[in-house]
Picture 1 (spheres, rainbow, N blue to C red):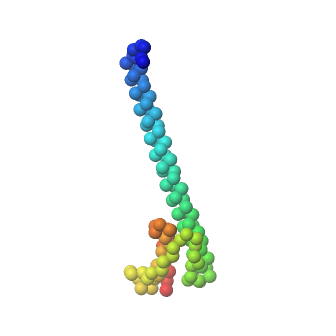
Picture 2 (cartoon, one colour):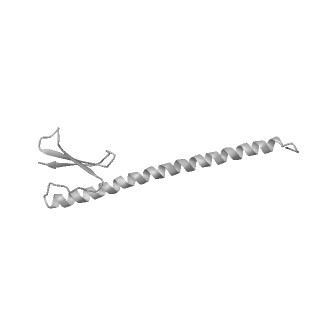
Picture 3 (cartoon, rainbow, N blue to C red):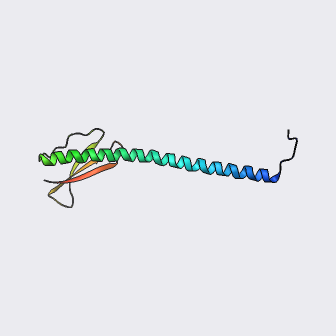
Length: 105
């Protein structure tokens, strides 16, 4: 039970304080969600670097077979624009293309 009256200025201060707190909470949640997305993209960049290292090793040894890289699906198809090229596509588990390489037949 309310024993005294609340001044209107204190109600306005309460509304302003609650709105500032909710804005801060919203910004913090957006920053958290974006940081989670950056982590998943960082893993794709890490896999891409690993793929490029393997490609350089095989290019140096003139070996056309790329060994299976962990959690990466390799697909080899002929290039439709050029008959003398082979396109090797590296996809992650969800099907997103991480890297694509063209080799001469």
